[in-house]
Length: 136
Image (cartoon, rainbow, N blue to C red; front, side, top):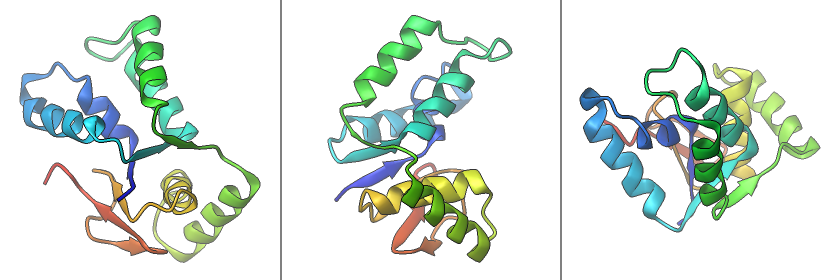
């Protein structure tokens, strides 16, 4: 089963915060599976958040890029006109932000049944995609 990984999964996988050890292990378990899917938006968000100057233990550019290249082994959805249009429709029909709607639209475009995210409502189903908080 193909599953979509939100940005927070990627960020937890590189966390060095002892309070996030359980989440780090769960994120790494998800990233070890071959059925993952991402979007360019998720990869971009990861890079920006992981390398920002105010982040404790921020990643250096080369390390962040290396991780992104590794994760590009997964299916990666670009923001195309159909994905953008679907995101606008999801936004209009739900309480999600545009950015979360774009993630759901990308998951739909890749045929994902599950979207792993800590940021959206656990158990909510949108257009055949079930949002699951893997850190519960």
